[in-house]
Image (cartoon, rainbow, N blue to C red; front, side):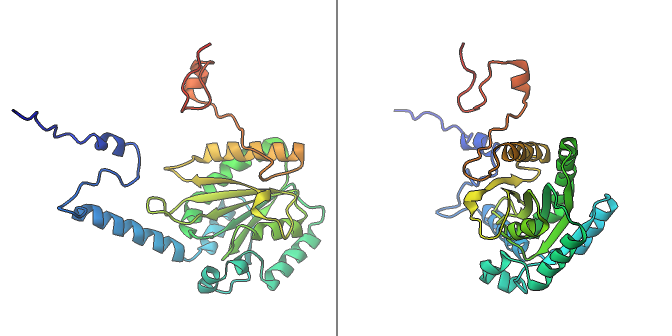
Length: 274
């Protein structure tokens, strides 16, 4: 019996065009092809480099100054990168010198602010270098429209998410948002995370924060991230809370929703029949 011809087209290739995930890599015998293996090693090296890349706070501060934004440099209790990676708890609080610096600043600028803006290197200074300025530009367009007062951009070297709570408390801020480099993935060494807290104070857990992740050119755009953050801020001020009790239900305008009022907001469900 004659066998049907083998289709030379690999159907997985169509899916591969839609995702950076490592699918349809092919094989060479029982192993991956050399090219796929080299790509994996390269991506792994990029992720490792992102973790160990030094935070260029001087360069970022200069760029902020050019854009007319004041900044203040602080340091966490982690004295160096090794301590930061080995002791996460040290990255969650300011060094005593930095805490005193912030107390002095707050004493010279009494009254507090509506929003404290913090930028920390986290696990990818690369993400912070690439995305801080363009995201802040989009965010500040909307905070100005709300009439909210902002702190200087607080730069924190060797910082983790929770350090923003101490900063917000010392500044007397109603809200705080920290822009921080996320743990690099094999396809995203420069992913920026945003963590928002209402009424920040030392000792809060992650349950009191809202997270917007994967802010980068290949992920969530600056405009969409700013839109979602502003929604959370408005709702937090209205309900006086943040975290697990505050859901991100921001409606994002799409071409489909403009052209078809019946389009579902859930792309998985598709249009709803009347």
